[in-house]
Image 1 (cartoon, rainbow, N blue to C red):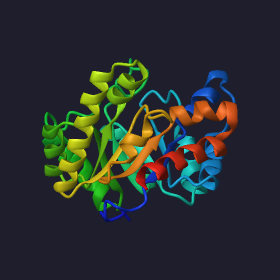
Image 2 (spheres, rainbow, N blue to C red; image 1 turned 90 degrees about the vertical axis):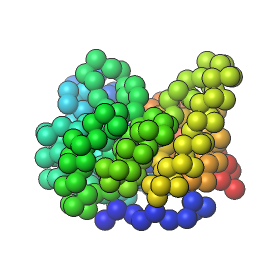
Image 3 (tube, rainbow, N blue to C red; image 1 turned 90 degrees about the horizontal axis):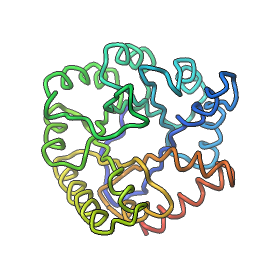
Image 4 (cartoon, helix red, strand yellow; image 1 turned 135 degrees about the horizontal axis):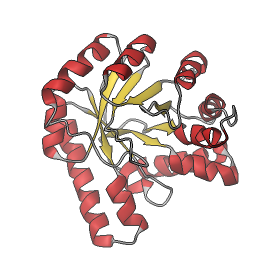
Length: 254
């Protein structure tokens, strides 16, 4: 069942996205490396949850991966998906702990922005209703924008995940004024979303260098991090990569 909204002062959860383990596997079309094995390693290393995005074009995670993850995981699976009939059927068949609705375009390299909930309010309200009824914790991946947060609350989504990509990009590129503006927007909208009774998550593009300011937001209850951790694991291993991220998150929260 979905986790209830609790005190914003609690432990910050870390969700690990294992999509890009599948990206490496699919480059050769074989069976290795196995995303389920990576998920289990992340679980042992202290991940609070595993995220996997089943895209329409199956460019990384496949249906078989979702089946394997549902069978082997002891921590919650966060099933990322677009708001399509096909994905709704798959989610209702597996009923993962969490379902995160994300925008999806076939031509994009990765998720480029948040979902436009305000434009598709009626459609999304009807789309998420059976998922909630089935016991999934439904979250909506959106920009840190007041209009989108209000719309997410109106359609009955209990969780919003704020897109941190613009903040992370500005930090990496040394655009300090843009970084400050994006940081302030994320901080203000975290407070606003929490004031509406929404559980607040954040993610996309977070690294060791930029995670602590976001982890310091008391309203944020979960960070979802994938590409950076999988990349860092090439050099140091998944366990040590996660351990360092966990330490930075805990230091920020302390």
